Length: 347
Length: 233
Image (cartoon, rainbow over all chains, first blue to last red; front, top):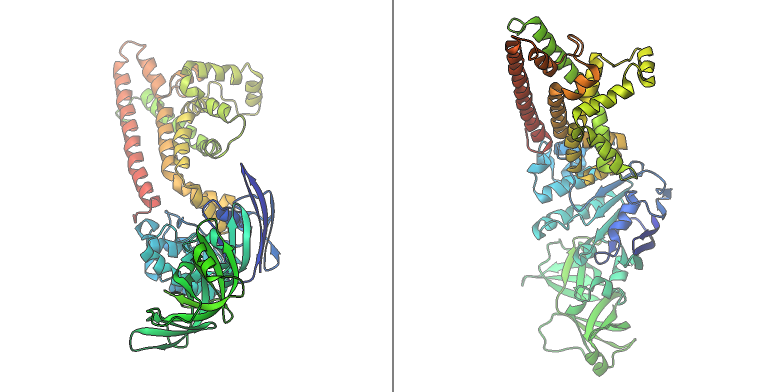
């Protein structure tokens, strides 16, 4: 259990944030300048907030100096000590922990004797994650740890973070402005805007909230849902079962029976009053509209209920009027594309 | 070397080395401290401290020496108190070391401060989050990273202390065996007929020591920089 309540006056910007989150990965999400990094720095004690109440598993952290807080901090840049080898960096915290399992999980065994200057960006960031983990933290803070990396390196590190979430059991506070990362990792999502919390809750719930869509960005807004791989068919498609219905996706890299997390962007969902016939889209689900949110632009963000899951769809005002969309409206959602967000649902 | 140098010349060289070494080693911790304060802290009086540290660089050395004499000389209250405590510096080699240390201080602080400003504070933050106290952060992260700058500062200060003349001769005079350092000795030899040969030998010694110090610092700094710069050395 993580509890954070902060107030801090910067020049012309006030941070006023309070949230609680269960174990797992808590993602702080919002545009740049929303105050995400300030929250994390205050939790670490690197920023002395005017008012702070921070507790992890019932233990108060505020009031303690940085080095007594027992937090691990992975920064945007690796910040490895250049005058020490990777092994020296990993051992810096002197926690007495056996480094072997962490080294193996992060795949950095062959780098131990190297100096940080001789590492690639991805290798250095993995070493930095290992160094933070080996301080035996009661809370791991990750401030956009993948932001400085290219797509290939991100793809290399994300699975390690998932393993951390699922295997290490260390609660994490994760800052990101990438919806893809959030969809993949978050157990709890805290949406921030202008130094304030817009919404806190389980990731799937917050992501499918039409009111949060503007914070996320209309183009990237979308829901995540849990699904199970039912079968891999011979024509190259995988069959996934979710609470709201069945999805067909191009072959998913997960074994039959495994749980996956899929992400459906609002702009990839069309609505139809009657069950559509003779269309190329494979994924059609019966739905009911639970809420509508009119934006400032030409679009309307619609929250749909399919089974017990929630989806988001983005339609134009004109279509909404013509089709008479309203709360309780029943029809069908045509999903143009579905992405597997993660090998595991997590949390 | 003592065979080639006359006893008076050798005395001056040995004294100069001792004065410069003591001046450098004693002022080094203060140099690091002052450089750290100037580089990392903002407070009222920051400019004043900075100016004070740099004053000996701008003032005529004779003025610095005279100010030392009127504040620490045997006739002054502070001077007689130090004398009574057995720490008198007036007309002693320790006074020469003090004068040399003060004259060399700005150069030392400047070099260390520059290297401190080049250290990424993010590394120190990271060390703190890993459970290191401020003192441990300084000892294990900051100090190793500024080592090349500290070394450069120390060598510069040593060279400056070896050559210091104006403040020394004004403060502690030119007493053979006590305060007659190499520059003072060269000056003294040039005042007497036939002293040119002694002066020349000391000039050669000065050049050799200065060049040696410079080469040694270059070599050491390169090795230290390679060690802390992340390349496998």
